[in-house]
Image (tube, helix red, strand yellow):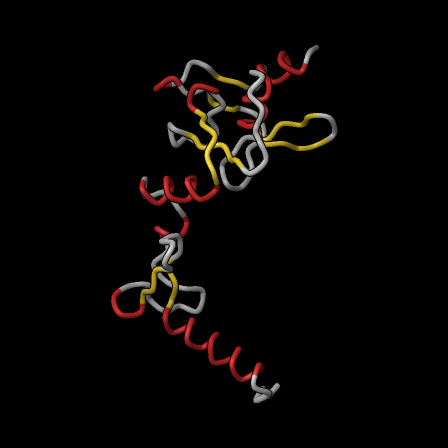
Length: 145
């Protein structure tokens, strides 16, 4: 059995909107996984490679359909990491967009919300200030621990 035949055993082409849904192993983030040459790879990347579309260094695969387990090469585009994050935010899908509180429980809204200049991360101002103070204490030799 060829790699393409083995790959296609896990593809459901009968779904709506033209998506080819991966029915094999899915990782915790919702992306399909496929074993190839002894490595566990993302199925959507393998789908492109099986269509002779190489993925150049520095580029990532973006799902135009926003369905993580879709492996239809027509729904996949190559983008930079910066563009991938920007598209994710624009579509309201990014982790940082959905986050309402920082890891210490402070709200990420109003006067406590800092958005870095590149616009990719929402940062808690309270935690940012604590981190900066800790850094300055250590740098100036004022560390207490």
